[in-house]
Length: 547
Image 1: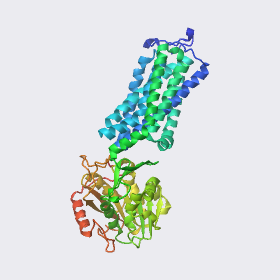
Image 2: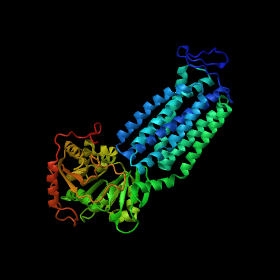
Image 3: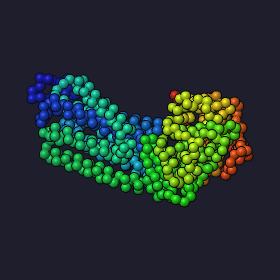
Image 4: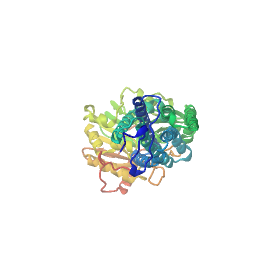
């Protein structure tokens, strides 16, 4: 209990706990103003802390993959570390102002440089999981130590019951967390990027935290401690400013370490990072397109993938075709080779991919300048949301699902029973749906879960694959790898329809193909059936089953 009658403003803690007594602070402002300044500092520091947390979550998902697992690791480690930090803060209650100033300086340095350190660990060491865990723990310890010290400081300004003080601090903390949580995806990430955004947050953190202690509680510090804290804060600011100035050079060097020496385009859109490698002229076969660090297109062998994905579904009526994903224009290129196709609709969530496919000379050459064809239209929207609208109902003879591997967590909903039910509703009578289902040889359980999910949505299926990948995965941080870390050697597909199993063959009117024939498709279907895993449950939105 707080003794409101204590002389000299002394605030004794409960005697039974043996806590030290802390004299009231000598402030340069009125107590009411000082209290508001402390609460404002809580607000800003909470916003900075949540930005650090979200930065670690985003980088963990981007660099390592499997966003659910990385979110669980970061959050659980950080919450545990906050408890550790709260306990350690008990040792600093005798000197709360100095302790809080030192903690904010350390938090600003670690949080501000965390993005750069994790990316460097991934680029040059090839592994960022240990660094992710270490930064989550260290930042969590420092965040956990903030509130106990702020509790002591605010009680020294104006004595009040512990419940009221805790309520005020937590209210400011939670509102600050809201602001930080909104600022990260809508301001810091799209405008400044991951590295600069984290360093700017660290700069704000050290200025606010250090400013509160060095001005409002300066009488609590000895002369030596004041100068020491000033030196520490200036050193942290200098480190963050230097890192910000060097951020562009660091990104270029690290990107070359990750992707090789021929990075031509590197763009952070509102959805993902786009990296295009290869020479700016010459053969498009030397082009590689990475989306969020995963190799999505290789000019050396993309034709094998896109021919196997598109042409089996084009057997039968195919005047109206829907391509889900495929903003690179390569699936649309194959569809537009049929002169009797009257319309192609590409639904791509990221307008940056479409812009790159339209304007980059090498990528537009690879996709046959598909976006210049008047038959092609583009919708920049989430495929799930678009299929739920009335525009898709019963319109399409063929649907081509050219989406990232189902094991990549953000795309899991696009491989759910609910999604396939919407896609089935968009098919016209007799229509076909072709789905990219991930590598069959290295991830058979994932592949057959896709097939089971399509059947659960009321479709009849024909599984098949296309082998002979020519491109390697050593040139980039691709996580779409087999269960034992080996790069996938094939692509798995499923052809589906409402009315009976669709025929698996190449239409006699199909344009000349380089890697596909009716015979090779039938052989691939027989090989696929030999690896069938029966009895797998479908994946749904409330129960995703891909890993």
